[in-house]
Amino acid sequence: MRKIGGLFASSAEWETRNIYWKFLDIVKLVALSLLMSFLVYLVLGGRLDTYALLTLGRVVSLTVMVMVHIQYRFWPSAAEFGMKLYDFRRHLKTGVIWGLIAKFLPTLVIIAILLPLSVLFKELLAGIDLESNLGMSTLPLFSLEWFALAFSAVVIAPVWEELLMRGIIYPYLRRDFGIKLAVVVSSLVFGLLHGFGFVIIPTFIAGIFLAALYERTGSLAPCIIAHAVFNLIAVAAQIIPGLAGLV
Image (cartoon, rainbow, N blue to C red):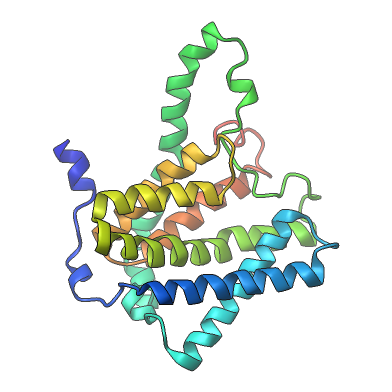
């Protein structure tokens, strides 16, 4: 238990950065994001599949939020989030290592639990999807749409989701309800954000690792790097024979 508690050791940077949000700020950002996504749906809803719409909605939302921030400054700066270029260089190795752990450890744990059960219940694992295909499996490999979704998965999604999950929701819950509940709730929301199937479990566990990483470093940079590594492996599984069976 002491080792588990050490996983969430708090960084001193939590005391020096103004990363706590007001509820009204969260409402503004969520409303703005939903509005942009809805407008994308109205304009392109009949031309793109669901995941492509979600991806484009994220891109537009993130772009608009950055523009609004530059104009009105109603949310923390990149420095307060720990997202300066220096932060990415400093935490590169840590982010990559944690990304690999967050990707493979949950899958190994789940398989270790389910594999014995599959002996008793035939084909139990066959009907369970441990991996989200990021909406790319139905696209022609290396097509323009495929590259667009791959870029979104490895670059846009890590920034957008880490800003939302660890940058906004987690500090808000941490302030009012403590670290433990903040970790559980933000990780659960992170899992639900990726769907309602079995994939919730590995993404929930990955969310716990990412929350722990944010707590230990006080910076979103390693979380974004880890998230990018997490998604990059999923993208690589689409093109490297045999890798899909491992992730």
